[in-house]
Image 1 (cartoon, rainbow, N blue to C red):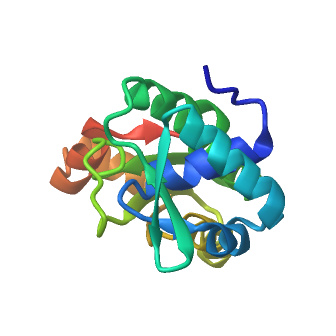
Image 2: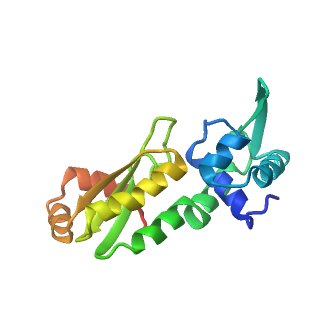
Length: 180
């Protein structure tokens, strides 16, 4: 059983679940996740021993990556992304934006059909500052190594599009994950 109590473990899994086909070596991942390389290396090896990660040597570097054949992969992914990782952190950051009323993740992320080139789409509803929202999102883009596209709407615009059965909004909300 893999323990999810460690912040380092959660950061590692959050990264690899959002980037399932990526291979990273310890120092590269340490810089990206802003973690101590020695502690990170220890956790990577623990996760490899537990079967969730695999590794291979390319030259002198040991690259770690997600084990796509791990039996509980989907369950761990749900736990990490929804309750301990990306979604929780993003929701907490967005709550700090004044006048932001609702936030939804939609598209390939929400449909669980992300591939290596997929971005993450987010719909923000309210009279918040789009610039402030962009600053918050930029932090997450760097952290997860994926582009995040924002669609901003006022509450009035959102309600009008919902009433008129706007195709874009209907499609976006059909599988959306509500953050706020």
